[in-house]
Image 1 (tube, helix red, strand yellow):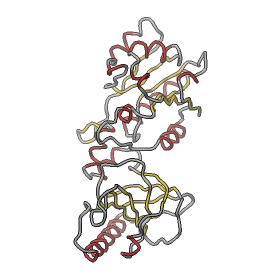
Image 2 (image 1 turned 120 degrees about the vertical axis):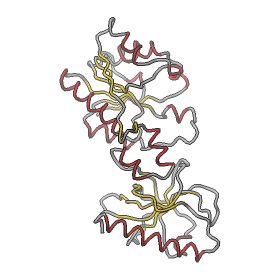
Image 3 (image 1 turned 90 degrees about the vertical axis):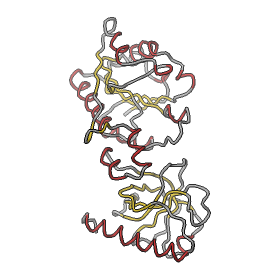
Image 4 (image 1 turned 90 degrees about the horizontal axis):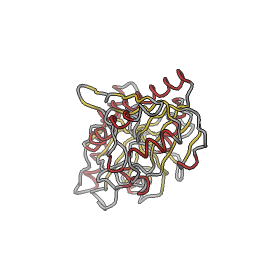
Length: 310
């Protein structure tokens, strides 16, 4: 799989392509349908299956309030590769790109640079400066250019439309299980294990402190699965938020890993969120906190037993 990090890197005389466009954040069921249609068309017409996506994403660039990524770029690229996408156009979204008008985007990028024969997008797709472009504008170019527009309807579960935005709202409100049901893989945060204040060790629950590069509007105690390279399946309890009983200042992700005592400082691990146990609480004493942590541990183990994971 080739990754082009700049539009200027795309080779001249690019092979005819089937292109899908979007943020693809979280890789939910709607994204899967876009990829499936793109691969299907590429195989049928012998075109290059291409994904055009963005980093930073528009919401990141414009610093949209409470926005957070559902998956890392690395995980996203791995998913595209495993799914059969052969080229990724990873556009650095910036002010210059945001000013490109919709017609120019179609003519100069999709047609002239990518030689697109199929453009696969969701039926709510908008593009170009101030989101001026829509499906009708794309289709209006059909008469003068040899390409087809394929639209995919939004996927619904129990009458609710699935989108990355709706999944973020579910996660923020603590509805982890429901959010995960809408994703191809459960929500996870990946980061290196760093030295912390070792307060968990003093309380009898040593934790791995995960460095996170962005504040997540997620708060509480969660049952999690921990992925380490070449390791057996591990479970634990994760606390994400601001440690209200202690400093209550900066956001932090701490994980108490069950039946585990290895030194993993500096190691990068993935924390997969499975179920919410409770909200964060400010306790009056350390003893109150320890009692609650014991109860959290018992509840988490009970959930795993019911899932036949112990």
